[in-house]
Length: 289
Ligand SMILES: Nc1ncnc2c1ncn2[C@@H]1O[C@H](COP(=O)(O)OP(=O)(O)OP(=O)(O)O)[C@@H](O)[C@H]1O
Ligand SMILES: [Mg+2]
Image 1 (cartoon, protein in one colour):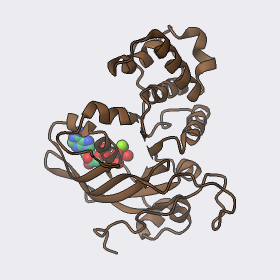
Image 2 (image 1 turned 45 degrees about the vertical axis):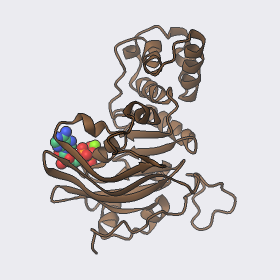
Image 3 (image 1 turned 60 degrees about the vertical axis):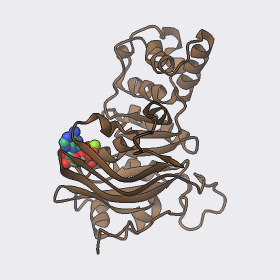
């Protein structure tokens, strides 16, 4: 099979919520996402110091879906996420080519307002990285940086996002205590709250549960599912069981002699039950990768 061809399941039909995955049909389940393209990558390639890390990725992601990026280490998952809010600009010698759009916005255009882009596209990383300040200040900083200074608006926004991530009742009495005193799971939820505070449209989550114990991981996972349809979520995970539980769509990447490529993309159920590419089948069954 020629994997230089575009992915095989382009622009898939929206899948349905986890727990409603009788396949087919879905008699009463509501669609998880709008059948409207939100993110479009066309022939996206990324190189570091001239070394190709990702080549010719073409895919369309619908608004409100959870898309899991899976594949072995080094196949370009993080690089793909970072290109979406131009964090790749911060890496010396990193070159991104091809087309990348959020709605009509040309992400890679030199004129793109990066502050606005990063407000629209929030990212959280594998290890919770809270700032060495209070819980409150962790959330106030991005708000102030983006022009919100009114005390009452700061307070109401902080309460709203902490409610959203299920932290409010755990921390409302100690907002001025150091964020670093929180547990790992609480810190990861605080990082999510910090990403939500600027009301992004898109959330990029790079292995957000891999540093967490199973209980905290479950809380963060439930939270991600609860954000479905409010945000377009791209999550990198090495945990295929997690991808199966939460994702509407799967993008499966593979590294071919050090060059990452998108091998297969489609509804999660179809990818897990009936993968088209033999590499996908081998990865899912655990015989490769
Ligand atoms: N800052 C960098 N400088 C040079 N090469 C890099 C840099 N970041 C990533 N790479 C290279 O790009 C390729 C893809 O890396 P990337 O981190 O995107 O993979 P990944 O799929 O996220 O891997 P993992 O699952 O281990 O996190 C790798 O070969 C990696 O060595
Ligand atoms: Mg990575």
